Length: 252
Image 1 (cartoon, rainbow, N blue to C red):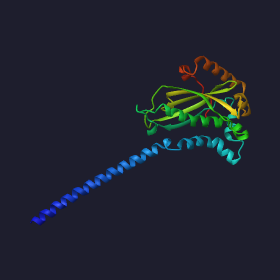
Image 2: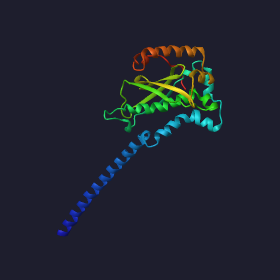
Image 3: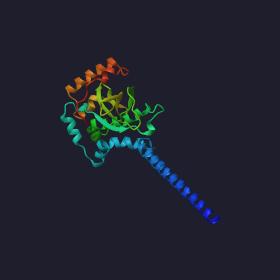
Image 4: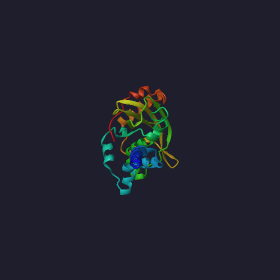
């Protein structure tokens, strides 16, 4: 009789242990998949990801055609057919990954500039594609960037970045970039970037570069001059009027 009781109690104990073990394994599997999801969703912040994304932005319009020996592309023809081709805009879409979130639980301000690098690279390699493929793309350093932050972007929320040449003068090219969400309906931030084109130590005037690419004309020059006066008046820090500026001509 005692033996039967002992056997029954041991059976209960092993059954409870088995259930606990199954529960622990299930919990472990859940955490494992959550961790894998976390890593995959944070691909933008992995070591070396910046360089991969930067060169990927330049790959289709600059690196690949040079590798294939292509000098005349459909992008060049499309830009030259439109008298406002120099004002074509580049748009990229992405989302806020976990490593981009700060302690306020929204996209950290510092990460905006990294995404701008990729979007502006896509823009400049397409606008000056003819120059890049025939003579080599000039060095295009950033002289100044100003960003006005307007709305937060939450974790995993999708957003778009659109950059376009706003205007130019004898030396500088001014790029306007807009962070938007909800398919462009909500403006989250507006950035102004000042670029210069360099060929060694020599500065390449924007007009010369645009003329070489077949994108300079009087209509475009008038728009640039008007926007330059507008920018000179408002300055980099007062972007209220720029936020409502209509400056969309064609998409790259």
